[in-house]
Amino acid sequence: MEFTASRYMVNGIEMNVVIAGQGPDVLLVHGFPDTHQVWRHQIPALVEAGYRVIAPDTRGCGESQLMSRVADYHIENLIADLAALLDVLKIEKVKLVAHDWGAVIAWQFVMAHPQRVERYLALSVGHPSAYGSGGIGQKLKGYYIVLFQLRYFAEWLLKLFNWKVFRLFTGFADELPHWREALSRPGRLTAGINYYRANLQLILPRTYPHVTVPVTGIYSDGDRFLTEAQMTSTAQYCDAGFRYQKVSGANHWLQLDAPEKVTPLILDALH
Image (cartoon, rainbow, N blue to C red; front, side, top):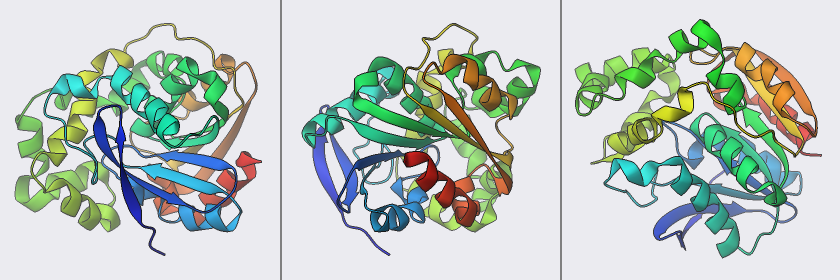
């Protein structure tokens, strides 16, 4: 099922956004190296369940405006984009679902604007304090963050041998054609990697505020980039309650790899 996207001026940039359905608003935020298409199995199900879905391409990704400076992708700009999108659409409060880098942004958004979030579903990535204190296991799984700091080299390496290195890095061959098509366009791969370059401080241990909205964390046991501990230990930072759901037999892109398991969990957690 295809959904039409529209372009909106949001926080000084053009943002490509899919809006579909009618009912309570659900904001879906994708991560790297994705676009709103990572939610292609969930959007129809959410619409059928009676929700209005808002699924943007975050800045520099998909068909949203490409920004040239690393600093353009600083977390403060990414938080402001979500707030401005809700303002433009005249939405006061949403149910928030986010994955990977989208979840990183969404955690910060929930801390900065709790009054705008009814409940939050975090896929794969736990609270930033839990991630930062995740120990050597999480640091080893996040090795690529250091590699991504090497400008030009990281891009060259990932595209090597017709994107074979990228395929080995992600371990998800089925999705490679979509990623290669989107990221082969000038500047798009660099834009995605700039999220890591602009926000290296987020991987360091530090104390972040507790979250004051109900949270559900969904983690897949085949995740090669994140440990289960950084999700389960998130409970101590969620003052309004934390519910944990584990998906077996799915990789990091659990909403694509196992939609038959993940979509019902999302629908259940949104109630």
